[in-house]
Image 1: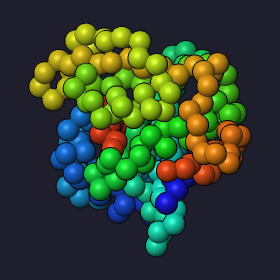
Image 2: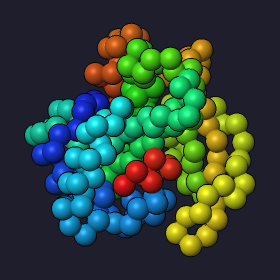
Image 3: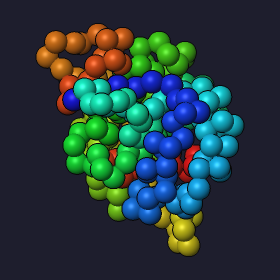
Image 4: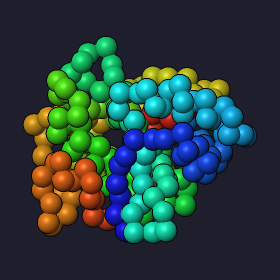
Length: 200
């Protein structure tokens, strides 16, 4: 089974409901679990499709290639910097799917898909240890803790700052592929999501 990234389509809304409606997935996210597909379809149409870099995480080798999660790079006020976000359906937690997707996203955005990019940041809740492991395995460097950085579901939270810069080495994807353009399509191999989930 391989992890691939592709653009979302409106027809992906039912697959998205698998994680967008799950309270455990939403625990570290700013959004509350969706109860119907109508608002999720509106989000998919109005936010995801026009987004500059928002990709579906898919598994190949099964019966279909429906999304099992999402990974995105949100623009910031500085064009040289973007903020990484990801979310994966609970059924895929602990299988390396999120790590493979993050590696592929980094290879893609630094491989020419995002012009002028020098730094990718990942801001992860201090208690979200699973998501911290994801970015660490993908080669991100922990820079420190942003204390009382944001308000989340009734209380102020600390975030761990991670970064990957253009001169860092990509974590190995597979023995047979070292080219970033190739890595985007084939990654050998929980995301408990990071702050990206505020998009939902």
